[in-house]
Structure formats: structure tokens, C-alpha cells
Image (cartoon, rainbow, N blue to C red; front, side):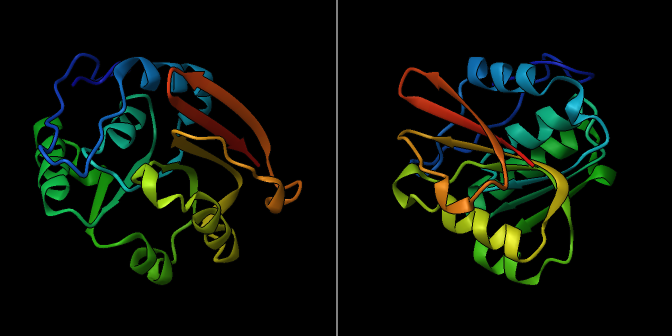
Length: 178
């Protein structure tokens, strides 16, 4: 796995060898970041269910100000820390080895770009987004990226977001803009 674009383009990313962690294909990440374009610059990023941290590291490579990685898998945390060290970006990154509920319950941070890529079987996207909104974790201009393998119905969120939907084989990516 590699970073696709930006200042760390072509740099290798360590990926945790765990059946619980599914890598996002390079072409999908490339498409997502092409759709975001310059909107990444200077954003505070939350990479929830971070896995290898590929989404957050790609955002950092393309101009994000800072990244917070959250995952409860020790192999994921080890890979994220190794990737941060290899890129020399520790001053721009925070890593939390805990579940998403625990992190969301305690954080006082506000983020303008949020990646949600939980294990597909959990199907907790709407629950997590609602919690993020209730706790004011998403800024007024936030973008939330959801990667899933099935259609999601965001109607319960009201008119909060403008939503774009992208299909890549069995993968569906939603980009929600406030």
C-alpha cells in the first residue's frame, strides 16, 4: 500500500495483518481525494476506525493540518504509529487506542474532515454520525466520508448535509458536506 498523492506520494504504508482490518483500495482512495481536491487543505481530520491510517495519512500528505487516529485494534495502532514514524509526522498526529464510543464520549475536539470506515458488519454509520453531530464534533463546514458495502439512507439526518454517492464495484462511498 502507498500514499497516492501529495508531498508523501509513493511512500509505503505499513498495513496490519488482521482479518478484522480491510484495506481501502488505492483507486478508491484516489477517487475520494480527487473529489475532495483542495478542500483538504488546513482541515483537522478524524480518522475513526483508522486501520492502517491510510485515509488520515493521505489527507496529511495533501495538506491537512492535523490528524487524529482512533482504533481499538492493537495491530492497527502499531501500524499507524509505524507509519507516522516512517513519514516523520508525529507533531501533526494523535493516536488513540480505544473504541469509537469511548473516544467520542470524551473528546472536546472539533473536526472538519471525518473518515468513517468501520467494519461493514457493524452498520453503525448513522449512529456514529448522529453522535458526532450531537456532541458538536463536526465543524460547521465539516465533510464526512463513509465507506460501506451497502446502500445507506441518510434521511434521518434531515437536511444537514449535501450527499454525493460513488460506486466502486462492491464498495459505496458517501461524501456528506455540511
